[in-house]
Amino acid sequence: MRIIKDLEEMQMYSFKTRCRGKTIGFVPTMGCLHEGHLSLVEAAKKKADVVVVSIFVNPIQFGPSEDYKEYPRPLATDKGLLEHFDIDVLFLPEANKITPDNFSSYIEVDKLSKKMCGRARPAYFRGVTTIVAKFFNIVCPDFTFFGEKDYQQQIIIKKMVKDLGFAIKIITLPTVREFDGLAMSSRNQYLSVKEREQAIILYKALCLARQEIESGEKNDHKILLRVRSLIGSVPNIRLDYVVFADPETLDEVKTLRGKILVALAAYIGKARLIDNLIVNAK
Ligand code: AMP
Image (cartoon, rainbow, N blue to C red; front, side):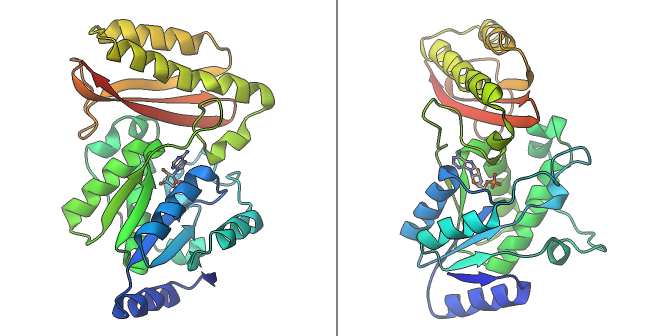
């Protein structure tokens, strides 16, 4: 596994790889790797000739009161995991090279970025799309891999790729969960033992919504009320949002028909956790 920190070196590596007729699969991450990330790495290995994984805690996607400084950065462990997976390149740029002091160009996917997580985190998706686009220009991948766990993120990136004509195929993979259903997340590390036990209510709430929707309940208010009261029954959890939305447009739906995205975000202790399920209404 080659470690590349320099932006031009990464670009040159990709250029030479593509000149040799090889495809590049790219997995962007913020590190603190878990099985969710590794499922993307595995898929990239199956799909592409050469696999590049980046670890970069993106400063411009964090709000001023968010956890940029505390975000876990267990680099030695991450390197070990990636070596085990025998990837080709770990791209490890420094923040001051990606967003130097005079950095002033941004990409924003209008509308989609303002919904759901965009309400509580107004600059979040602009930070994500700007840096993902920059990485696309540096890594020049044929395929890029994202997790359904960050559902809104992958929809927004697909829209950016389409609108701006990036010649990249976005591949989305299912959410990997802990034994009890909690979606794996680097932020689960913030949870105390008690909070970790309580966090399972989020998945249970999604399952409750799925069960009601799939069994034919049409009253969205009634289901949302049950979901909110289930989550509300656990102390220390503050629900940010729960929505029923169109899986493509992310517009909230009132009529429960066809495929529906059930998505939520909640604060537990220091952690803000998100999760979602796609359900089939009758
Ligand atoms: P992050 O390091 O949190 O920025 O995530 C990097 C990539 O891993 C994103 O595409 C995420 O959607 C994906 N990811 C994170 N957690 C999971 C999970 N539990 N299952 C599948 N993919 C995940």
